[in-house]
Amino acid sequence: MKASYLFGAVFSLGILSVIGCSNPYPPVVATLSQGAVLPGNLPSNPMQDRVITSWIDRRDATMSTLYGNDLAVQYSRTSQQQDYPSGSTLSLVTWTQQEDPRWFGAKIPAKVKSVEYVMVKTGPDHRTSYTYESYEGSPLRKVAAQQSPTPTPQAAYLLSQRAAVMP
Image (cartoon, rainbow, N blue to C red; front, side, top):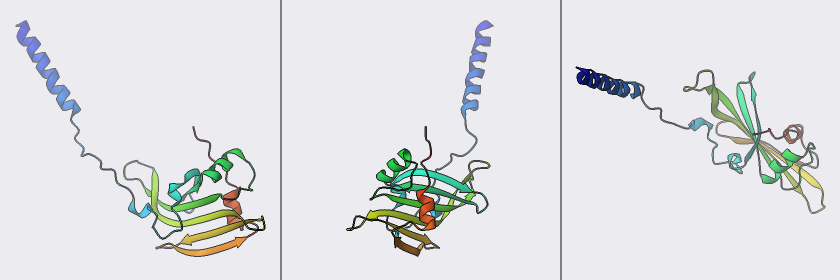
């Protein structure tokens, strides 16, 4: 009697463990939001640079990430000034937001709204110049381009952003 009871208990435990480990939900296939991908007709791909900081604008339902080349990232992490060294490039990508279908309450990038570039250069006269370019629309088209010895207001805003503190 004890052997059959023990066998029944082990058998029941085995069945319960198999049933408990089965997943009734289909597997989630990871996909990229194709609208969030940058098109190839930009001067460079900002997402190949490193992240400096990011922010969300709840009023406009957008999210933005500021990228920089190695020189710009190093400067943004070590200086509180806005006088980036020559050769620095900053790029701001702004996306519209959409609900994340896999995480309740989360927002993810939808489609690219704009891409902005700030490039710091030194001319032959050893003076610093700032180039600002902005791309908007679908498909993205250049809507602004300006080179000057002082940054435009939007370029100055991007140059004033400090690197996010990351663990």
